[in-house]
Image (cartoon, rainbow, N blue to C red):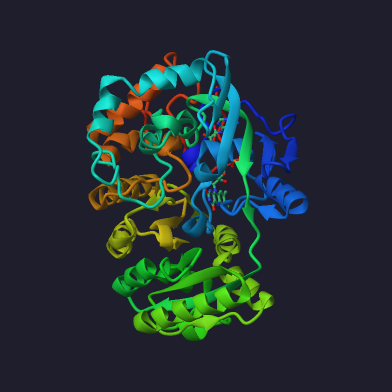
Length: 458
Ligand SMILES: Cc1cc2nc3c(=O)[nH]c(=O)nc-3n(C[C@H](O)[C@H](O)[C@H](O)COP(=O)(O)OP(=O)(O)OC[C@H]3O[C@@H](n4cnc5c(N)ncnc54)[C@H](O)[C@@H]3O)c2cc1C
């Protein structure tokens, strides 16, 4: 993904040699090497403990534990179960100077990085931020989004450590390889629910969509995924397939999942359908496991469509693909996004995690057109302004990488961007680890890594 794209630097692969997985039955945790594939960790938890990792991303079949934790990844289940950071019990790794790192949730962290993080919390910039938390514990200027993988997690670092200490583990999760190399992670696990239910609900317009999303969490939904207007058109779902009767006149469809015992699931689906009735209609309710899987396949239709478009000369391009805004601002985001895409003359596959206000926008770009690069820049700049205006961030789950780092100050404001720079300069003063990721280098161009074809680097 562009958020984690590579620069002209040394690439260190942890895929081989660090892929072991061990299950600890006493603590119901799983310890995995940074190179283990996320799905394999989940399978180990299921087969040995009868438990699961409910937060995994759609890329779980190939993404690795190191990237998962370094990006604070999330998935459809994050609406009900939170993102990766809530499931990490401990991390082992190596800091920029080659020292061992061991950070734990219960505050038994050790090593020079943990000590430096402890001192960092007392730096004037960070301690002033902590002192100005509002009554709900929010740092001044911190975005009111349900999930975020942009910047450093100062909110969690300064807020919820054990025994009132800064939470060093939480600062490392989501730090995108800029503070330490992760070698091993211990994950918590969750029970496997007895059953699940799936429902597809139409929303008549952007306001109905927002109102419905805001109510669905209270109704017991654990996933709340959006198939946007453009997605329905490009996929042809408006005219064929099981969703067509709903999709024909809908502004968007929401795919809702609930889980629990059979009576709990039936009651939650009733509640969600009653809400749906208010904002677009009762929708389509899966009556079996097979029907549930079929509805999920509609949501997963994005990848084959993107591949088909590529064969027609259009490349699905990820540069505004991970914006997150406060859920009440989601309708305005979608409406303004349409204007931006029209102005830049891009069609786009638009879908994502509506429940968390996190929308994936994949513009379909003709990279043979002479002005494609300037139109990409135009759309990126306009979306960054929009997201800043709505109080969101450019990354809900894919991280800043080198693409979004140059927007750090525009999105976060000078005070928080300055605090992020202080984190990096304190914990990796020589700038050894992932230079230009999260905190930009002087003059860094967001689009320097965006190329339709592999490029040779010196
Ligand atoms: C089709 C597709 C679907 C996706 N769906 C989702 C989704 O649903 N949710 C989601 O959150 N993301 C998604 N992603 C993005 C990405 O796959 C995930 O964020 C994933 O968890 C990252 O892991 P990775 O192995 O791909 O990491 P990489 O891309 O290899 O790395 C990501 C970042 O972490 C750093 N890093 C990697 N390993 C380590 C380590 N051991 N120590 C320190 N830093 C490290 C890298 O330097 C980089 O900055 C998707 C990507 C694709 C292509």
